[in-house]
Image (cartoon, rainbow, N blue to C red; front, top):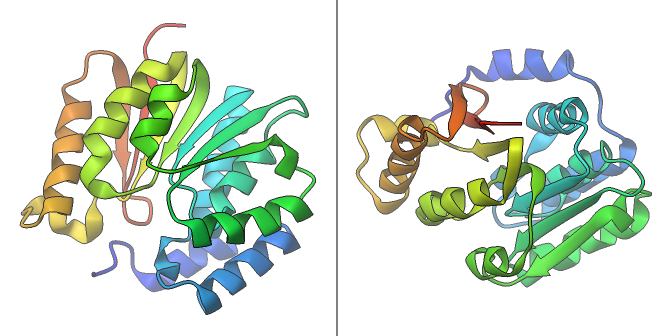
Amino acid sequence: MKAIVDPDIERYAEAHTAEPPELLERLARETQERMKSPQMLTGRLEGQLLRLLVLMLGAKRVLEVGMFTGYSALMMASALPEDGELHTCEIDPEAQAFARRYFDESPHGKKIHVHPGPALETLDELQGPFDFAFIDADKQSYPRYYEKVIEMLRPGGVVAIDNVLWSGEVLAPSDEESRAIHALNGLVQADPRVDHVLATIRDGLLLARKRGG
């Protein structure tokens, strides 16, 4: 898939973004070396943005749909207070085991609660409200994830959704994934419950704030 942002611009932006802790740099390197789909890694630029959003919201409860190797979870957990909690959904046992090793090394790992299995089932079991949510999982389920997550946010809470440009494929959706993402973007655009923006950060990041609060 083609890049949305020029790689030189992406590198420049990363070079002028706060450095992650050494633990996360190790996590990123090992993800690149060992995992089958390392491009799924959230990375420095988006990871720091998620961390800042959690900080700015003063969030105490965060929900993540799609953990992968735990980079984004650790970034967001580092912005939570000591009594904060982050609930994350992940279906892949290999990714779960990978992430748990790094959670065990981090002082923020104790804030993270991993929920194995299909995320849609987990979302039916979890209790809100949450202050912030991040969706970055199987794209076919994006509209359903959004509908469940928005109901679990507190008024004034924010959801961030990754890969909403899908390398430009949303302009002429031709497969199940691009059609689902396009449907999600239309769903949020028409949703009177939120204020929102679709930002051209990496592969597209949609931010929606639940009205009220």
